[in-house]
Length: 541
Ligand SMILES: *[C@@H]1O[C@H](CO)[C@@H](O)[C@H](O)[C@H]1NC(C)=O
Ligand SMILES: *[C@@H]1O[C@H](CO)[C@@H](O)[C@H](O)[C@H]1NC(C)=O
Ligand SMILES: *[C@@H]1O[C@H](CO)[C@@H](O)[C@H](O)[C@H]1NC(C)=O
Ligand SMILES: *[C@@H]1O[C@H](CO)[C@@H](O)[C@H](O)[C@H]1NC(C)=O
Image (cartoon, rainbow, N blue to C red; front, top):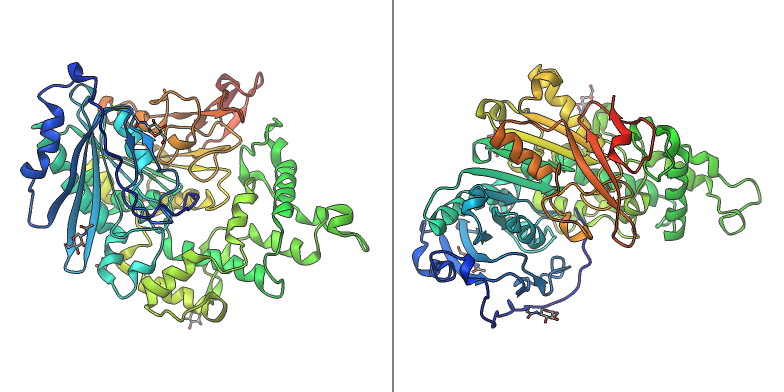
């Protein structure tokens, strides 16, 4: 659910590349003409149509051809990072549904391990992740992304179209993977060697879905900030929103008050780990006390920057779990440290993701509203419907049997979607499979990342070379040593599993400010002494 600025760029065309490419000597076998020839030569099945096959040289400009207002953010005239063959396909998945696929296949592939990578989506997931295609293809992976069966970060296309919901739950990903692999093998005239998946947020859920149901497709799966337990996630936004809205005339806090509360939350918990650095190293130890900022009689926000009783009640609620009928646990509360991001769920109107999910995917009822219709019975009903098992909460028996690998990670300062969802998923796998961590380690490892918000950015060493991060990572080299993608490659291709994942933090000006080797769950980062911005000053315990 990485939020991107939405702006209108109606039907912008792909910027034509008019200058001759200059790196011909590095290209073998007429790569550009073989690429454009895919329009004629690539016909894997009746369902697949080639929309575009074009060579894009390094440094050329590319513009997102689908200018859906909820998708276009950031994709006006980006510079291509390496010579690629770009293939755009339309694959029909049923008589009423189809998926748009983009394969970005680098010229420099043969001597980069002949790897395939599939990237995930975000939010309601109708946006092709072009930044990830650009970044990961520059690392030498033939990289494939897709629109998950509909255009735009909106649920409207689900309305009365169950096949589109099915694509969203898993089929678009599976289809794009199978067709994408065929395209890669066809272009290079040889078979790819290893296959990877990486995604964050909704993309994290897609990764877990693959790990649970079709792990044979990927040698290594990286699932970040996974939106699994999907129906309850969609419901949870409105549960907390309704609590804030009822009798409190939303928004319950102003933007200025959210900033003040975030700073207070960090202040209350920052030094539990022994270092004052705006990073709450272990939020599980952080028990916030909003009551500390309650207005004394006669005092107000304007006089004393304090909160009303209703606001304090809301702030306490924010961190408590969401329980359903009969006290059933449904979803964790929010985590501390990035409350200005949490505030995005508390606008004057009800959370759009809940509205879209209930109206169009679950109930096909355009009149449904959070205000009139959202209650705990509606939540039970959502879990009963659970379209195409989108909840994504099974164990990993198939993954274990496949011999393939899964890495999950989650920002410990994720204010949109609490890390506790990933903690709980890990522990549920331990219980359901009856396997302690030492046994899970052979195929499933989880790395909580302190100082990382939702997928990207944060106050700590947040940059781990993961999905959705490249665009926000200033002044980094690609392919960071110890990052999550290349750690997975090392695990898959050399049999060396990652013990820690290296993160990097930056100054506001984009200079490298810190490094940290983040520990593997259930261990936590602990401060050993010395300069806290250096990874050598931290251990695991
Ligand atoms: C790419 O777009 C930018 C911004 O519009 C422009 O300044 C630059 O000249 C373009 N580069 C090429 C190679 O067309
Ligand atoms: C993709 O194909 C389907 C039919 O299978 C068609 O309805 C749809 O318009 C096509 N989309 C594009 C962008 O070509
Ligand atoms: C809650 O408990 C009641 C009484 O035991 C039972 O009838 C009902 O089915 C339960 N509801 C849920 C959602 O489990
Ligand atoms: C959901 O999963 C269950 C259990 O694995 C399976 O029996 C069922 O067919 C699945 N439903 C759908 C719609 O895929």
